[in-house]
Length: 546
Image (cartoon, rainbow, N blue to C red; front, side, top):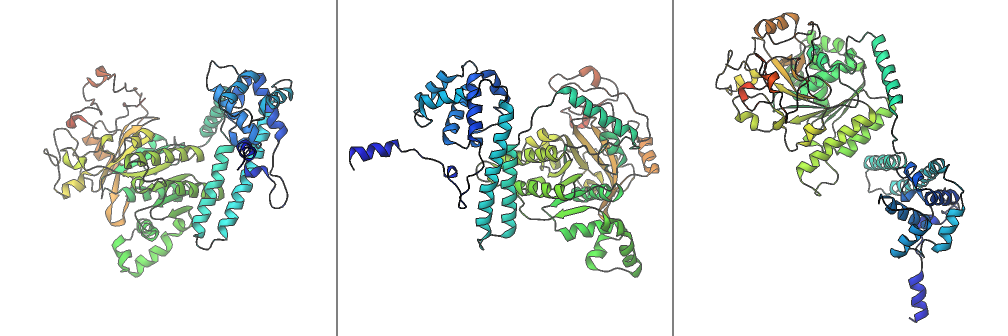
């Protein structure tokens, strides 16, 4: 090969494929003249760059030359003390060996001559975003069409993959902008006014159906990630199904539950058992009397008419879960999502990190999903065996398995605790039974009494709520007035839901412990290292988390 041929080979420019027309002879959507105007405006007025730097990326520019110029401007902008003009950009490209590929000094000078000011730079950038989205849709549609002809691919996997590619375009092309506080205050005031005008009994979110819990959190709030954790056999799934049933049947909400542990028919059988008051064992064995069969027919009408969506896909990935939630939300509207349970979710990029990092990514994704759809997401989680090793079996935040990011990402963390279970298993504390010196093992003589320990509440109080587990029907139900009075008579710190609201005291930081507050009689520190002084039985509304 002669020197002339080698020289031409070195000078050959690589042009991206999308620069050419497609098979139909049509050029992909583009606005090269606006690209040049935006780049020229950036080099004329550096102060205007901040208006579009978070909107545009390299892919928004159709011309390969303009992509290189934008990348240079972006690199210079990241250096706070660096001026951005024709000379600095050309010098940067020269140092990077990209000046000739970008069109040389002449092309850069032509860019600055395209506009006289940067007044319309943001409007022009929005048009470039539209063209970028159109090009991406064309490319993704072509890939989807090509893959659809491949019979070796699963159609449902292809559907999920297609949906993920489209959502990726949305995330890249449509970036959320900031809001002025005046607009946010107006929106907040209107929302408060609407809630005040409706008879909601203090419940502003999705009601749980349990009076103590609803009194504490005002219902499950939009954009909140709620972690419901417990040891095995505590009734996590039964409690979650009770929440689903109460929201969908009693309050006409649209609810979706992902069951990675149990089949959908098993969940439905549990719901039917609880609704018709027919023991689950009889339903499983089909040993029903005529009266029970008739009850199944009549009592499940409301359940059948409710908007409950169940997905029991095994080994579900967090990405597929998000995609399915978006699909159902767009088609039917979603008010609540329940995941059973978090540690069984799979991360697509498994192998690139340890299990703790994987769980951290999953918990962050669930929180992001809650914010994106503006709905509460309740994720069940397992606790470590450290609970079994302590005298006091009441769970703590440190008992969450595999990742500390779970409690970090969650807006609320709740634990289920049933003393009755440990008593049957012979795992009572050293004090044991009723009347232990720390008062934490009281069951108040109520069969199935369950304490819902609210260990973290980003937007309100922490403490305990009570409900009752009905084992033969695999469901939880609220306490009767008589049972509440029974608890109240034995535990003066318990505040029933009829009690008037009390003044809430803000808890100091763990690093700056408000010792004076916890030195008061009958007030125990929930963060105390002494197991005997942690989490007093009964809800204490005087404790609040910042």
